[in-house]
Image: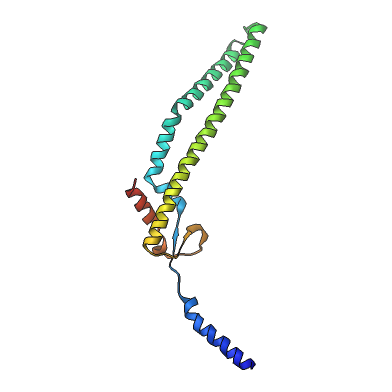
Length: 168
């Protein structure tokens, strides 16, 4: 009886081997390289810079005013009365606090907007990867950093860049 079970099991294993051995069609994509090479990335950077240009100029102006007050304190400090020194120090502290507050807000808003735009771009990249994977009937697409070796013809990064560059 034991021999019969072993033979039946071996027969099943041998019959299932071709199904298991059937290779899946796998591709890889380097998302970071794709994003870095997209022309949209540069356009997004320019639009964000333009969006924040007024606020950046305002913060730079505040920085210059603070620097000028500091120079005045160093240059004229010996000639100033105690009341004038105290007033200048208070003015500088107030200006510094406002400068730090506006600078921090600008930095946070700038990072948030950059993140939003990067997420939009990553969504476009993901959609392009999905489209190419379906069109070329890939079973799986992996991030290139997750694999140790891949044949160059299995890397679809250039196809993704090409597809997104055409669809600007």
